[in-house]
Length: 105
Image 1 (cartoon, rainbow, N blue to C red):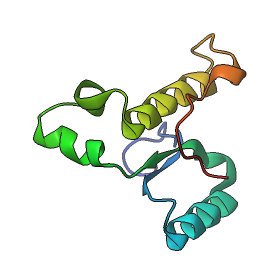
Image 2 (cartoon, one colour):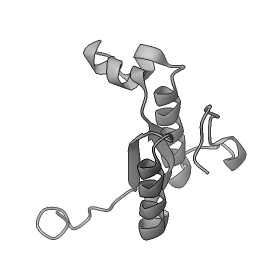
Image 3 (cartoon, rainbow, N blue to C red):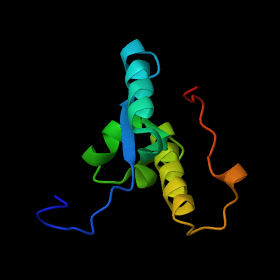
Image 4 (spheres, rainbow, N blue to C red):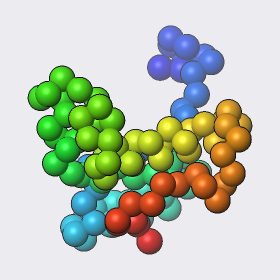
């Protein structure tokens, strides 16, 4: 893409989605991707949850469908992380991540 269409194109980061911490394979994939791509991988991981699956069928974003769901919280954290990474926010590092029930160690 960069060579043929857009030499200015850069990768902001890699986002891991549909993560299910109960699955050993999912944990191995996260570990392997973070080991191989290091700083290109966003810290935020989007967990698999019912609300994320329901939102499109209701014609809504996850925030409009269920703002308190784990999926909505994950996407809000991603937005904060991107803003923080690009120095577009005054949010201190200590407040960057909104707590969710389950985190990746």
